[in-house]
Length: 541
Image (tube, rainbow, N blue to C red; front, side, top):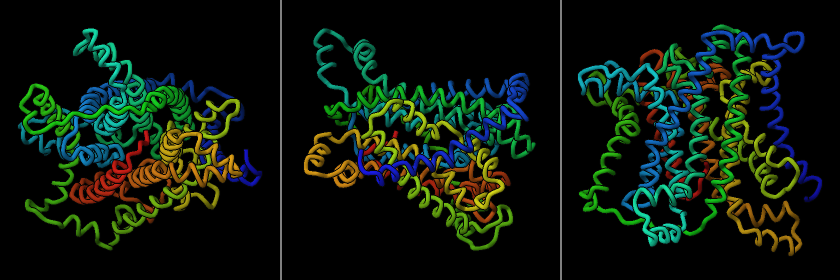
């Protein structure tokens, strides 16, 4: 297994996860179950309370409904990207992926601008459609957020289906729906289930969207935990709710990882179906018209919120203007969040770069352990190192408050950067692990036969080949960091306010113009990031 120093290096990221994830997690469990002794009083109080019980049930229900809506929106797109080739395909795919890393407050802002009382759609239709501040807005926003997962995962596997299976079925008389139901669907089902489980986890842990466009009646567990801790200062009830949430999300994450195994095995298929060409003449066919209708639906609910934010950022006092951008780049102190807007941009970039460095340093050794070591309990280890993906930023911040409130680390820039690292690291780990799995094992064995030790063979042979996955994971970590809100809002001092927090503050004070200008900047950063990812040809999911 290599030399002793290399083992110490490999174990250092596990110490990081122990200190900055598992110990805070245990502190939440202890707070919810301990009061001079082991007690179920706080859990019982939460489960017997009508409001908390309603919140738990609604959280699960909206996650299920959001997942189903996301599949309905995403599967036709996965089919189009897997089966057809058309001009600008890569750019469009990258742009459609941007919503996944958009700050949730920006998503809420887009839907307010579209469906609010003075929104574009409301004025166009002539009446309020009743979408905003309801469960409908939550479901639509979650579908906006997560349908890129379905498109990327399912289309990636769909285009890897060995065409000989479909050809054999067609030779036996299978056509249309029967061909899809009997042959294609079973082949792509691992991708559908894996993307559905990941979508469910994200919707289950949703915070900002229910908080802003759901309202008190449609609060989720995240909002309830945040309210109990930050507003009511009731840490016991907040910890009990967090304990229930952690337990449920851990189960969902385990199901996701199991489904990911089947997805990864199917994705190893190296026979790619060549997409059919699709030109302007094909639009007039029935299939082309259906694709146009689907594109219009996607435009209304997925692209329109982004364009609404862009449009609003360029309007000032009834005319076209860059005034909102001038204010964003102003060095003037803003008492609303205790810093200038320029400082929030600098903070976001600084936290993003720190997250890239830290999450990569943590993910690489863990990916190596999973890739190269065989040991009892490896599957459980995989679940444990991926568990941060199933923990919410609000719950993580609650754990940090409990553990680090009396230490010099608390209320510093470092603790915010660490929180961002824990949140983003699973995506880096998954990206690197996926890239490593694609490397032929005989290359590593050849390096060993030439006298290289395992760790050296990994650094000199496998890591350079997997560098595309490392870069994609790092870009993803940066995008996740600049979009993060929940943990930053709870842990950062005013001088460490980020762009996402500033957008939330502007939104709360109804300053939509400034919120839109900052959101456009976040949108541009995210779009550029995913255009690079698309060019690299690597997957993170």
